[in-house]
Image (cartoon, rainbow over the protein chains, first blue to last red):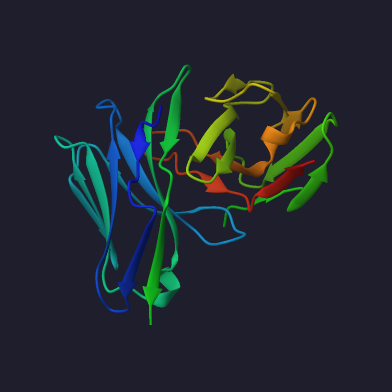
Length: 114
Length: 114
């Protein structure tokens, strides 16, 4: 039962334009959200995070927005660059069977076209 | 920089074999995790550990076991490999503490079970 969903498996964007990656979740008790970036043949690397007490966090070209009422998370990349082409996973922290546990989405493959 | 290493990048095993996947982190992190990544399913948690000799089941522990004898090392064991365990296996580690739980991933081990 997927608690974190990324409904777009892929996205193509022209270089210099905005990339918007979306993520939906079902558990209102999730309190911390993260985005990871994954290149082929490498493990995911942390990109940006946001606590549930905030609605926006910005780090350079990357901004994460959180809409708790809609249970929706988005990552904006402005301007997009070819090096941003990767698979992006969103993740949410919640209570597992014992202690905190992270739940990952299925990933969105972003292609930035030069 | 946190470094998480995995013993093998690629493995080919036969059905019924016992398989060991090793993971080592060098940043004294308390928490360590094993995930598998499959197309369309994202990252799914197999087992995690909050301390030496402690282990907790994740969402899909069946067919797997783990061992954590030292803080820096977390092993995933497939007692009798099956073809449905063909997957990408990712190890991760993290610190404990509010909003410190960013996970750092290894490069992954791609396992093929014939």
